[in-house]
Image 1 (spheres, helix red, strand yellow):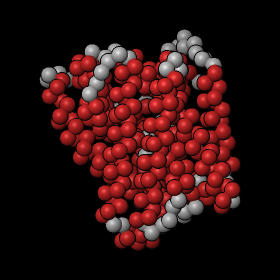
Image 2 (spheres, rainbow, N blue to C red):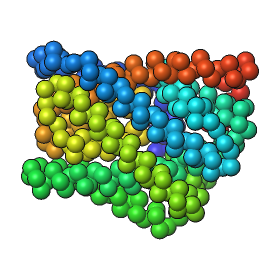
Image 3 (cartoon, rainbow, N blue to C red):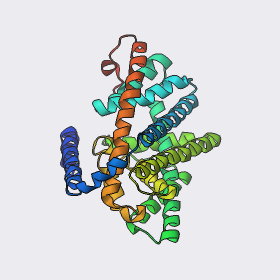
Image 4 (cartoon, rainbow, N blue to C red):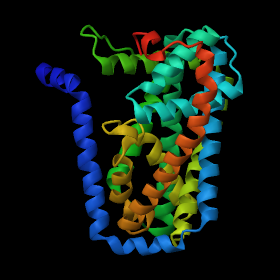
Length: 325
């Protein structure tokens, strides 16, 4: 087993690239075999693309607010402008260079704001608990509504959300910590999340704030689904869209492919009986949202990068990056 983990760690980049190619190939093959679905693109109006673009922009704004608040907990103040730009630069560089966004953010915060980045990461990681808890509740409430109104249910998805909710509730009342004698990266990450959560629990007002932001963020993610499927001539309700938003957040952390390409879409298609749309339409809509998001990231992220880079005083963030990132 140890040799298997060592092999996976050593060849992580190659395995990720191979999986990405396979997933993208399967998606292309599926769409080719169901190419009649592209007829729906004729109804795609520019106004819906703009609506989705704006919803994505607001989502990034909310994430910037969360990061600004997280940094304030560490008794450091960052301007909202920098917090917002860093969100976009992080997303942009992660699409170009593996962990490039994290490296840039680490150096920027350390150089300009003298921020201890490991503590920031731990605090930010603790927020995952809030997000997982909120997402599981939103997912379960959505499933309950869909079941009682339409009679649709997927027991595997239901079981997953129940497991996630139970795990988060346990963490709410217990502060576990795992021994990591072999310095495994996964255990180091889990302990970082748990340590950050332990600190956040001491600030109940902040927890309510972060929970509210998470719920509002889920709403704007749901709005994207409503708009894209309406543009494709499909009437998708806000509750089904909230279910998709909860799935979208959870799959973000399954990073076996860059930006969870294919993972999120695969779960959507698997639960097409819950969403109430044909799987080919679900896939097309999800890819359109991803494409608009890519355009959004490169346009706004490119501008943000040009604004922030001069503030690094000419230093290479790849050379100056902390070793623990």
